[in-house]
Length: 120
Image (cartoon, rainbow, N blue to C red; front, side, top):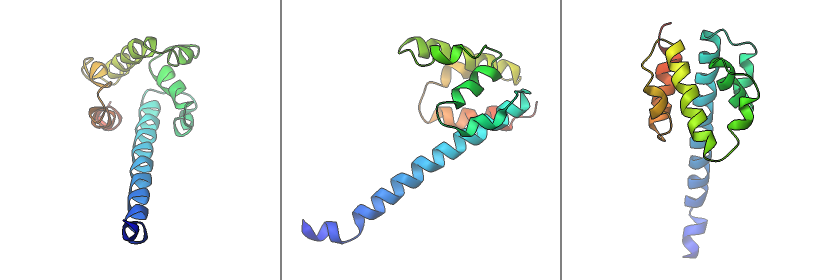
C-alpha cells in the first residue's frame, strides 16, 4: 500500500478534482455573467464572486435583492430557485420548464449554457 502513495496517483487525483471544480465554477460564473448582460442587469461582474452571484440570479429574474436571503433558507430555496430560473428562462425567450430542470445536477450546466448563449 505504501507504493501507492509514492506513485503520484494521489497527486493526480487531487489536481484532477481541483481542476474539475474550478472548471465547473468558471463555466457557471461565465454563464451567469452572460445571462446578466443579456437581461440588462446592473453590475453583472458580481457573477464572478461566490455566494454573491446569487444576487445576480435575483436581479436577472427581476426580483429585489432581499430574495437573496430566501435562497439561504433550506427547502424554501428550492422553490425560490425554481421560480427565479423559470422567470429568467421566460425573459430569455426560452421554455419556462427549464427552470424546473435547473435543480438537476449536471443538467443545469447544460441549461445554463442554453440560457447564456441563446440569442435574445
